[in-house]
Length: 97
Image (cartoon, rainbow, N blue to C red; front, side, top):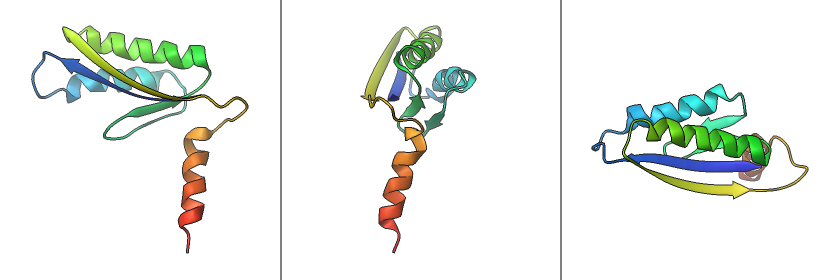
């Protein structure tokens, strides 16, 4: 499965990058395939391992903020692996002249 999530610390002012980096650090340390862009971090794995990483990432932010907002989007497709890159590669093939 793929999970795209965004975790935002609330009640800590406008500059939240340092705290959000703690969540990304947790994701990267998990060893699961992942990618971070300006809006979301996407991770790939099975349900239990992915959700455990999301929880740990939220906990890392909650340790430094009085309130946390979490947005999740999931793509559950049994039997598919390497969806993190293969979905993008498919689109790129369609964009080739």
